[in-house]
Length: 423
Image (cartoon, rainbow, N blue to C red; front, side):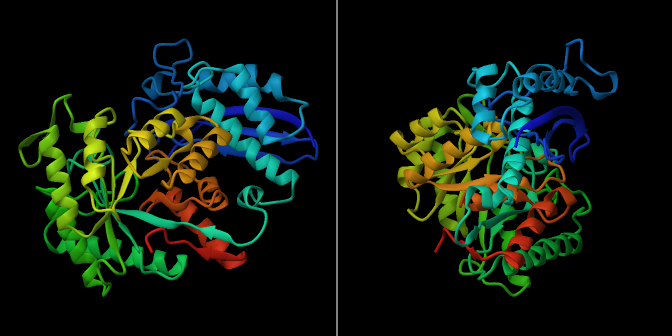
């Protein structure tokens, strides 16, 4: 089966900002479309999406955020290269690398390359008469990943109502994905109820659907979520645990970590001690980006000190980049990696990063972005790749629930097993 047509076009993400879509039509008359997410809290080492600010493509009313240049790259550079080729994901991605050999995909734009790559993955799966998940894992049970879900949000996702980005929960005691999701919904709604009773504004929802409630310390935010877990009758530690996304790069000035809500500044060594005390005194089993993206020494020191069962998760540190992952492996700077396809720019090379992480005993967490859309391909990738964990956001917003609902569909219609990396 061959590629008959490729069309790129501009659409909107969940924050009302432009993003890229690509549609690949095949010679059998079918069309396969992918829409690409975009992050607000982005690492300096991510693949580079192409925006129109300052270019001839800039659209007046989008404030420089339009993506027409990336769209034109699909229509005028990528499409002529791929039309009439056999539909094969590996071939498409290799052709995209030929067109843009830069490591960060800045020539075509990672938003352009990923849109075509995801659309090609869908089309390739169709040519095999398989779902996207089954195209990567054709035999046996599909392994449904453990969800990690926002309850409270701050940082760049919620106008800095907290210094850190998110307080999340992981339903480690759930026996099925549907049970896990029901627990998550109960805790999220209880948190909204408790927040309202305490006089907090709870109708403000962050980019990823978490509650944007202000807290004067990280500890108080954790204690609030613990109270919500207990109020719904679940056991903290054995059934539901906490996870933090610190996003520390956002409050690191090159020397000190500055927590504005508590009015404290910590040196690098002091912040290592602070984070170590925090995870020792709270029911936290995963901590993401506790230190800045280039503060390798603090990462290494903390990972050596931290409880062995703690998941030390690199996002801004690793940016789904094979070179940075290999550095973290050799220096023992983390033990888990967040996998974001748009940090990388291609489906196949994103999968290569995940495979390298798993080969070196890193946990892998496939993740959405703050600017999402109604596509559910992320759930297929996390499941088909046997990632073990998925991080989508909260349970509010159709762009989030599209992913959760896809996982519920797998559980209802396929032979599946619910995975638990924390057992």
